[in-house]
Image 1 (cartoon, one colour):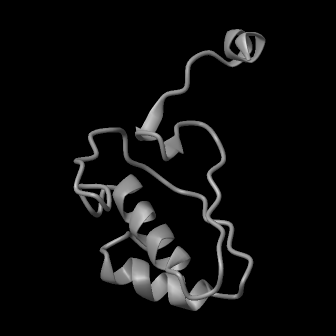
Image 2 (cartoon, rainbow, N blue to C red):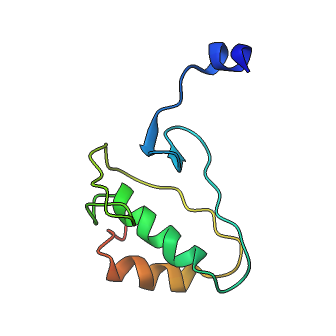
Length: 90
């Protein structure tokens, strides 16, 4: 592990212990547990539309575009959810 740490450096976190900066973050689980709601909310935080993480910790990092890769044909539903959270359409 020390060799990996030397190569990659220390991990910096957007959301401590949950979302590392510059790394891929995946949400997975059974149908109906709230993955797409959580994803929409996280996107709202990272784009600056919502000021805090789900547990209430304020987000003070950089905001900007987010790439969402969706594999379950929920694009319309994501748009609806993110629109309600104030996420810019672009």
